[in-house]
Length: 385
Ligand SMILES: [Fe+2]
Image (cartoon, rainbow, N blue to C red):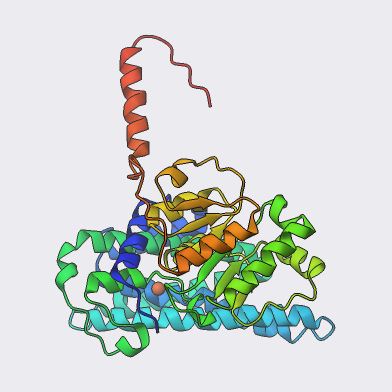
């Protein structure tokens, strides 16, 4: 199992604390309310142990449904293959959640545990969540994914807040029986954010800090056959030196399959399906370099201090170029190769986080609106979007 350095973990922790929450579904809110009702609103390790008992079950539900689905796909081998991939990832995610649970069990082993709240209720919750997950997955996989995404989003934020509430954990050593499985960490505060970390990346066999993450979706890059071929050929060549992980939109994958059927991707170019936000954040924070044509990723990489090459002629986020880690290369593939080589050689541009990128914009806007409202007291305020 990989070891993430402290800066990466702190980056994830900070990003997690400031990232906006998802718009939770009714079922998710009900689950969180039951947890708060039974275990209290305060965060403690025992509550997180219960959370980890529940966390594994959607993956288990998806795996089981996938295996059943595979027995009915004899006429569609390509579909069976895709379903098998789902089952594999679901198995892997279950193992990942199991390590979290075992470590939380270990951390709470000396605490008194109520039979009802510590054993029975978590299993009832897990069983209910399992039934709901497989039923939603059968009806519409998207619904089940959404429920799990809500759960993971909530858990990640709760973990980050828990660590923030316990600054003393910075110096508390992490000694665990499971270190060889889960990694070694300098302190408990270093280990806990890892419990929210996506592990699907590790399954690819790439080392954190030593791969290039790629995202491309703009029509100018993926719809123009010539540009797509130039880009892909260069990226595949780069992947022979450093692995490339490319989570692609289904449309992009289709374009690649249609337009470049003979392109040999080699074994270090990982073309994946789309990723959830947290998985992608995990991919970004551990990348040696990000190559993208997206807008928001230019900002995220600048915030996280990760080198970024943007395959676009211009950017609506110029501060990421003037102050951050972003470099624009347009459609100039020679420049893309040159800048990539520079970064891989250790000559990455050193950026800084632009002023006011402190996660407090909302508070400042609220203050401005309030002060404006005070000035205009008694007058009608017209708010336009
Ligand atoms: Fe977990």
